[in-house]
Image (cartoon, rainbow, N blue to C red; front, top):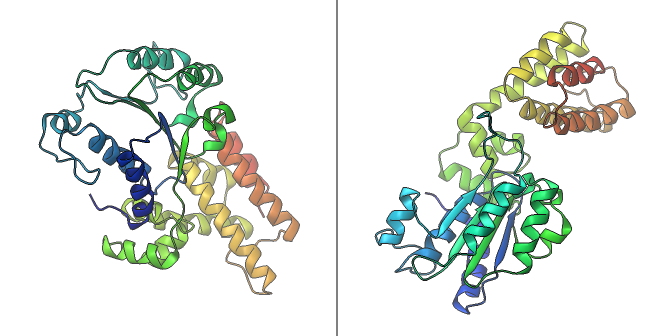
Length: 311
């Protein structure tokens, strides 16, 4: 695994606390998707449970490491979306899952060291689940560690966030991001980084998935609709069928580029008939629609309403 250079300071500070035996009972790893929070978590958990760690990193050969790699270590549990009774995956983390986790953490460590639990995504806990977790955070058992991961920590109650030691993953400098992307073999690193809004991890993922072609497709769709050549129903159906949230991200980028071009008295990439106020309103609506797609409303109607306002 290639360790991103922007992990360096975060890792060093956390390991310094470990050496002082000053690790907290709860960590919150947060920041934009794609910056390697989950890789960081796995590296930390492996090192904390390893029987022969070096510099905080696991040896990879002891019994604990082998159990972690096999997903069967008795002192580590990972909590995410569960299944409903009908076998369908839930869209949130519910209170029964947290209660079961708390009961697990109340037992003794089988290896005589740390017991660790991760919750990912922690910002998917519903209100009852968050309240149940709060009790565990307020009265932690000895040698227990809770690690919460959240791409959008503001969705979590402040009472939860305030009881965790927070580790913020932030965007690295553009030069560092470009150098890293080139080192891991991303073609057109600059284009990928621009598409991902400066997020190098996301740029790598999208380059591997071929999302940059999708970005161009979204721009062509919006330009065609603005020229009266496209069909909003057909475009909405196609967007909904494949990564609609990502397409709305790209749509927002395209409209932002249109607004910047207008401000510089240049022709924008979309040739929209909307004025500056209309473009800003559509940009906001696209972000609201991206958020609403996570809820119970029909995605086809949401996209049709949004695209129907574009011209």
